[in-house]
Image 1: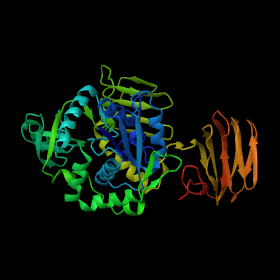
Image 2 (image 1 turned 30 degrees about the vertical axis):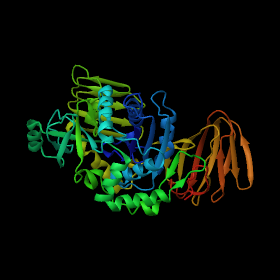
Image 3 (image 1 turned 60 degrees about the vertical axis):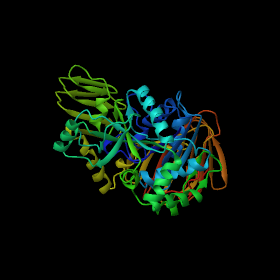
Length: 475
């Protein structure tokens, strides 16, 4: 099989860890692998030798780094299919199927997995994936349904018939997220499964279904793939054409195909599935103490029960809390009732309304060349710590409103300002005037660390004009 990993979505209910520039697939539970890495390894264990990851172009380099850094479970090859804009799962799957059909994977079933789910019994999942492969080769569209364990109101449901000899059950109807009474009724009936959003089908089957049921989706995807931009420096990256992909309807694969196709079946699963859709769900995946408390990071608790506390870089103490979630990051703190974690997305909506950067960026921001950390910011100034990877370079750029002062802390910097190029060693500095073209490079074999002080009437991140960039970020 070919793994198709859908790595999108902002995960607003998991703020402040998940943010627009570093969304949920890159989250790590504890000190382990990211959700994306776990999903890729799961697909490999299920029999997928190669992997196609569909993600936004803004996450392309970070996605590549995640796969390259996998110590185990990495696929034989990984292709990135980059979306210029988000258009939901139907256009993403359409583009993936068309790419697979034209890249030598036309006979291989596609195992479609969201990048941000957790599965506890991965051996059991691999067995069901092998079963799904056989059904897909017979022309079926296979959904992985989850046997409900509680009257959950946060998932969609599938009403299914009795399983046949192959273990597959015909899907009679899709049901939106129900209220509590309906969810309890579905659980008691035994006819309903949770809709996991995981699928298996051949490229020909899903392309044929899209051509019949959602022709506008497949045609937009076909055009976007025909005019896709191949990255000359990074051959495994293929960026879909923006002008044509934007014409694709913003529609899920459930609405576009699954609810109307006649060959849809579900495989009931009981492999410990979670979509990690809230902080309450995160807490349920961690070992609890005798009082139901869960922690991540350096945490001290006293007289607490059913409380989750997570800290990234400092000690957090909690006293006398009941049914509370606390998530501490360097620039934002979340405190909420354990049973109200679905409403965290309302905080993100308000941050967007205020145009507050905390909905989009962390204090430390990853870039293809390394990272920068905002240390302090005030009227007319900003102080950053910048780390540049060996051999990497920032774009040739200019700023309209700010000057910059750079002091090298460790490593060697090659600095271009106008026509002048200099090498700077630790404890040496340089000055970049407003409006001057400049570039920062690390020519060495160890990371370059420097402190940047910005001064000017505006120090926002959007005051940057990229003139040349090795990572293709110039427009």
